[in-house]
Image 1 (cartoon, rainbow, N blue to C red):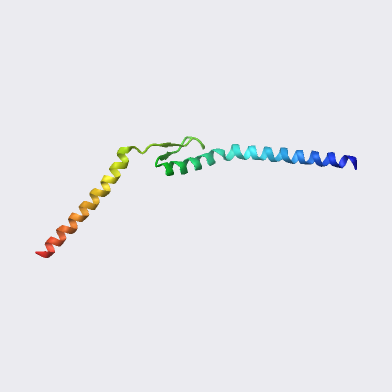
Image 2: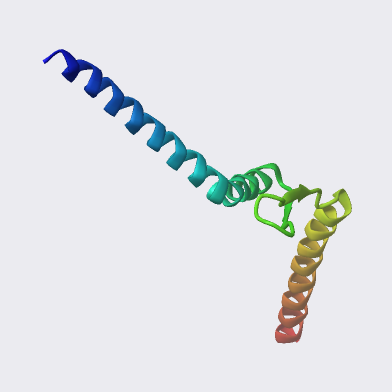
Amino acid sequence: MKNSKGQALVEYVLIIALMSILIITLVKVFGGYLKDAITKTSCNIGGYEYVEGKKAGEGSCESKGIDDIFNKDNKEEKESKENQEKDDNKNIKEDE
């Protein structure tokens, strides 16, 4: 009976040691993929573009650039103006 407490303690220590080894192994194997997933999300939230790295976990965010952002807005405005002009021209021809 005296040894049962010591035996239980040793069993708990072994379980904790095995769990620690398992967790460390999983983090080493899947850590890069987890880091990439978090980086992709933060890039999208921050308005940046995600660039994949050569290995898992090496991805990074790059600035889209102010010019790209403004050009996108300008293209949309230009297209809507062109569509409006086409509609106006159709209406003028119909009126004649």
